[in-house]
Image (cartoon, rainbow, N blue to C red):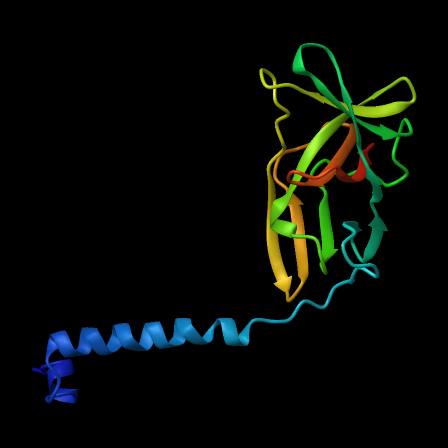
Length: 174
């Protein structure tokens, strides 16, 4: 008859063995971030401009500033010139890459724009605020971010916009 681990490790008690196992697991878990691979995909050539990612190709979004137009009953219409964006993607859940200098990637929101009268617009009011689509922002490296659209977007015009700013980065899902 063998006594199992007690024969091999007579100086350790069961509690000590379990504790040593936990320390080993924690030590290995702490080294995992050190062995993570660096991002080696395409990089945006211009800072503070989101790019649609199509495999290894990057398509710049259309940067503009939305104009505010006050309407009836406290409505505000945000207007972007042009009926459609020239930045297009067939992907219903697009991915963007963003190299930052001044822009805060964590403060971006995604909104749907309606194309009317040769322009794109979004209408908001205190009673009916605009609802952003869900996005996930992941830091790939220092100042390099991946932005993933969580919800599936129907075909149409869209804008990524920093919170509390009229700066817009437009694109179309086709």
